[in-house]
Each structure stands twice: as structure tokens, then as C-alpha cells.
Image: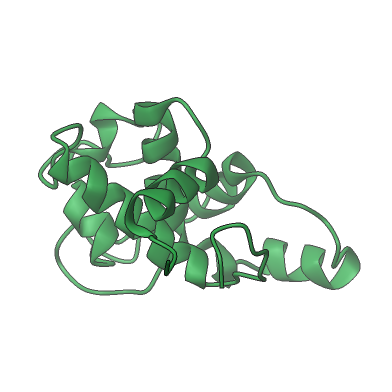
Length: 142
């Protein structure tokens, strides 16, 4: 494979998003202890949720993929492209599963938020941040 190859990524995007976040932490642009509200003031309870809790699925935020709204819409319009803000609106319409750090629940909402945080910090979409990161670490064989 080369850095120019195109592949279907599916959930692999989550791995790239978390790698970008950890790279931003390493570069000092972000802290794992940052409250989410520092970067996204619209997140319910975001002053008590940390970046680390998003990464470790301990935020308590509702998983938008568990909503009837999303699942019904996907049945009716399987080709629809969802914007991150639309997905967050679905999640934020539901109460959290638990308080931040009080449990574990896999939630795609966490990864969407991490991508938006990276985008805000870097001023470009997470995909281009990941491509640049891959370009830094990928060295083709001579």
C-alpha cells in the first residue's frame, strides 16, 4: 500500500482519529485532562468530561448509533451523508448513560467529538490531519 491508495475505512477512522488526538497531545496542543467544554462548549456536561474520557469511552455520552431516529433514517435513506453536527444533535437529545468517568459504554459520539476537536485545533478536517500524520510516519521502501 502507498499513502495515495484509497480504501474503505469504516471503523478504522476511529483509530486514525484517536491517533491524531494523541499526536496533538504529544505536540502540546491539547491535554488529556482538558475539559471537552474548552473546545466544544455545546456538549452537555462538557465541563466535567475530559478528552481522556472521550478516548476511553467513559464520557457517558449517548451513542447516536443507538437512536431510533438514525436507524430509521438509515433504512429509508441508506445513501444519506450525515454531518457530524447532525449526529451530535441526535446524541445530545438523549440523556447520558452515566456521569463522566462513572462507567464504560462504547459511544461513536465520543469519536465524532474528538474529530471535531482536532479540526478546531488544526483548522482543517480530521482526514487531512491524518493524511499529514501518515505522511510523516510512512516511509516507502527504497
